[in-house]
Length: 368
Image (cartoon, rainbow, N blue to C red; front, side, top):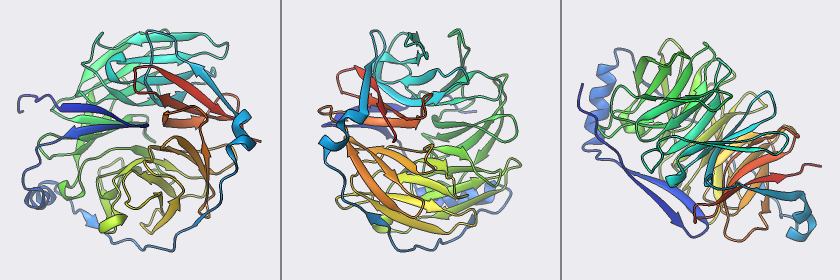
């Protein structure tokens, strides 16, 4: 095994948006992808998806009409810079804290805050979090680690067996954790993790499709994940299928992905080109439909209690119906970047707010 190489990470706060840039020494991507397909030992199926007509961007209501539906909770020091969110059965909201806060935070239903530092410095960047099959909270750390957090805040950090950038984590249908990881050697992979901690298996994915990012269990019982210019599907036994996105503005750097209420997979595209954003919907058979959104810089997507898709982006949260009708709600707070979003303990939409100065808040948008 090669000696680990630390990733060169730059956390850039650009205006009202927060973007994690991972600089990778890629080399010859096309050649490496061809060699990787041979090394896998099973075929990499690339199916060209069908692109359908875009949905409808409706006129968003006046901010004065819904401003009272927003409320915010400031994260007390030493916490801050929230990124990804998850909910535990007791109603607690757990979140990763990025930049040099580098920790895991929690807000209980009675409003009590907790913060647990991971490394005590800038040597960790937890950007994904999920509730594990063992009842603990698990996170992915792009510095080549992943970790487990108990209900009392005890953190156990595990090192990836090879140099990588763990960017997504999800509980799988097989009782294990699954991690989507990029690689400084242009060898992205999906890792199967035991709830006891060790990596069980690594499944290489095509280099031509780029780095693996968000990951979720799909309605078909397979793991679905985003790549730089494709959407991947991996069964728990290791059968890989990758669906390339259209070239040009259609390959908009897909990031987070979720299983929709309609039996499809939904994902956000961070840089689709043009003035707005784009959300993709993919069937389990690989058929793609892309919908325009009223704002860009899309970060996260989840299913709300109203059976719609909720997403975050440049200073706003948005709602999209499964037929592709999108509405934007600008956050009243100035220069805020929302990132992770989920359905909270009260049945409303909770989201992470970054401010660029190391502070942060948890925002709530009340549904009617």
